[in-house]
Image 1 (cartoon, rainbow, N blue to C red):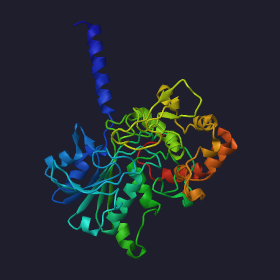
Image 2: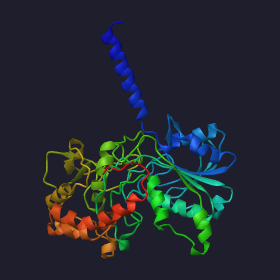
Image 3: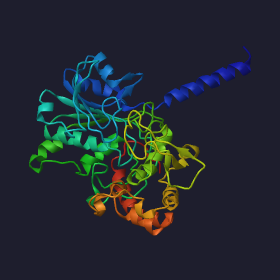
Length: 401
């Protein structure tokens, strides 16, 4: 072997070794940090299809290790991630393992005393996408509150945030708190689900019994961190977190285009690219069209069976901010401005779904008034500055700034 070949092989070896060292490994992979806490305990696991460890689901990983899972709790879209957005999911028995599955997105949103009677410790592992209106952070809060109320230790297995490399959007105003946004955080808050759990507790945003101060302070919340991750990382999800966020294009556009759910336009549900196809039959843009149709995870939505004209965002690179230029363009392109936003029965500002998603009534009015991107962003800045100061206290990973 000549010296050139030897050097090339060494370079390849070092490159591969460096790549392996930098592989991002979610908290579930750090089994030495949480397996000892679960052994000989009756475990209640909150999870869905995203809890992958290597090529296996966390459920199989735990069972193989001899850990006793008594119940599986599930968020919106169910254990397998196939239920429609907002669809209520019923309890069932997992056919593979025989374990009882308790839906926390149906008749109730948190475990009750009966659910936790035979549980010693709780475990949470769900992939989030880092936007306020994605319901998994609400589920996390309800689960934390139940764990605290019934004195059950909780382990959160952290996962990377695919939108964790920036912060943007209006901070939610309390009157607009709803199922698509509970806390006063921006649309894009730049935290992993483990960091957010720390903030919920540290800021006192969880529901707590003030008469149990000592119990509240002694309650065990353990975050198992992600390895080789920081807020400059651009993490590609190995599993779709929900049926209408099928790929990274949709996930990266979601912070912007989920706001379209509050309008009469199609946000692409029922297509191959939800949240990346945006359109309406009356828009006079004929370069691109699509027809939304029922499919698994999107059996019902707006404008099914109708030709919609508009925007193919798979052809446009999303930037690390909410694309206000696009939102303004979409609003200006719609011919009937008075019917752009979905109208609630009760015409109160807090009843408009667009306002619930935005977290205020200001953005809707700004779009109607023809405000510029700069003007809109200036109104966001004080809230974002205040939030960033709070956020810094709870970061587990190196920040992007």
